[in-house]
Length: 87
Image (cartoon, rainbow, N blue to C red; front, top):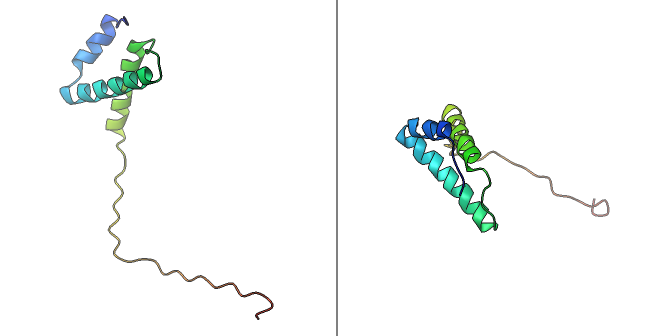
């Protein structure tokens, strides 16, 4: 059984509900991936700390939303190859 220190548990409990759900999802996904590969994560406390850091980074720097509202296509013209014999 993996143990989590009281400091880490306190940090997790202080998180708002939306952040805690994101952290739990990351941890569950990591543990599931480890089990699918045939081993258990050796330091679950480190996984929780890194998951909290990942959620904080994602909140500070969200993925840019690419807006592609272009209704036109750029004009492209490709010259056809003509062999020297045909020319």
